[in-house]
Length: 302
Image (cartoon, rainbow, N blue to C red):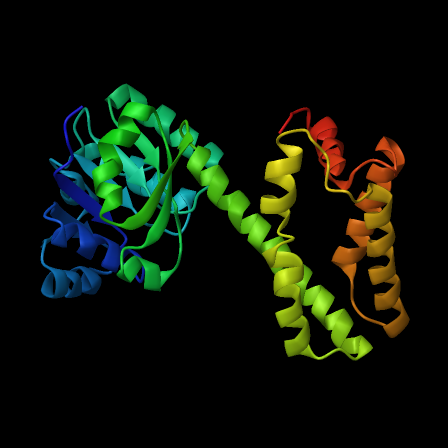
């Protein structure tokens, strides 16, 4: 596969502009496009590169086109046109690659790849973790989905934008991992908020709780580092704490919430799940075996 030198970049907002700017600095031949022409003008004035007036123009002759857009519906319309000839696919030649760095539905990404395959155009999903600050200093963490050879082809481009690149597997896998990572973070965030509001209602100090929860939960007891990787993935199941005891402790937390009139919908559901798992698998089994409850329900093994 030919190396990537000429790049079209679509979507030069708060994230896209600094990212495209790094590509210019690294010596890539960059042409940018945005639905707002003033953004294109401002980018060229600040970073250099070239501006395009249409989607066909930004894609014309490009080895790769990067999209940094709101969602998969916008990406699909921009790339395929959906009834319009002013689209990326109309400007790209065979052998070109679309690098979608947006956060998109992984099934939609696979559908896009299937639609472009007959044209000889490849798709790589490469969503990022990290916000505007990380985009500005090129320290984004980037996940990549695509065939191995294709990932290696786009790697130099991605290395100009981030500090780490994780090859996730086939097309769509990176978009799936990005969504799942944000799901884990979203759960952890409201989990902490719920616990702290219960504690505050009970009379605990907010700062004290926040600082105490770091070593208790995010530090040495981090569930992924201390339970999932060493105990679940290895099937050792040896944390030393029984499922029944975890269910009991969650029950105490929920009862505490009820006693002070605190809002605890997440706690109530977590209690139901731990109790159901302990009831089905055995309350005396190690807490790590709770993973089996999900494995059996989903039909997979971690």
